[in-house]
Length: 362
Image 1 (tube, rainbow, N blue to C red):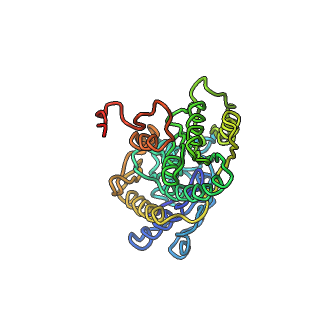
Image 2: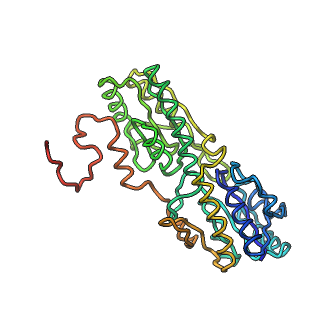
Image 3: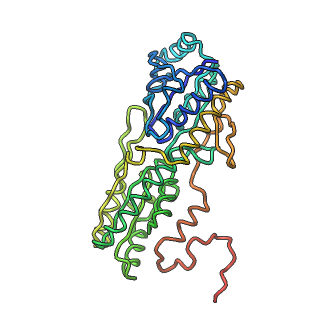
């Protein structure tokens, strides 16, 4: 079998693990050939490729980024895009293409499947927001990077009695913010799932400082928004692919907190640091499993399917269903986050579900 493979969208720790896993499974176990297309679907359309084998993939497991390069270009953005993709299949005698990417890339895989192309999807997103898979590779690495940064910021916040706002990735969901906020002991974590009230945030910080806690870490996802009518923020610009250019909510929060509370507040945006560097062990293993499973799905002719982690096992799910909705932060994690926020009057039992039994007084 001859299988193409590409990486699309943003880079992510663990991409090379997928490429390596797929290549080794194809060559060693299933006597197949892998053609790596450079810079995602642009490489397919422009015939920019290399033959991948075990030797080519030696040493790439711990590397961040992707040896194939990436882009957000895709065939449906070009009038002759589908024709060029079909030409690539014919030119290389491809039996399938494995597309590795996030929601946008999985949308391309789904549309190609609908147009009769044999394709398999591998979910990739730092934000961990693709449905039907419990985890995506790269997410745990990003969480660890953010947690390490928060650990370091605690000491400088305490030394200067400051509020430090840490802006992390999370366009539409707050998985990175919630996980790193809990792991790093942040006082307040703000996510897109729950619009925030700046007055309430400031009140919690003031009460915390009145109790002798003279430093506060606030973690905020880049896509977090204030409750309607509570605070104005500038509308984000849009890039050529139609994606909002996020970033800046951390600066706005720090400025508002200092202005409203009088407590010195600074901001740190971790940005692309979260994407870079070597993947943690979990992401290397998950990426490897996804790569092997994608090749096996191609061998089985499971077109239009995406490999996914479910209850510890690698399963296949329809790409069309996986991109139907974003995977939001679980309600239990949101409740856990509420339990660890600074308390204010009215927070008798923070984080308690509305239908929970009344706590017994002791």
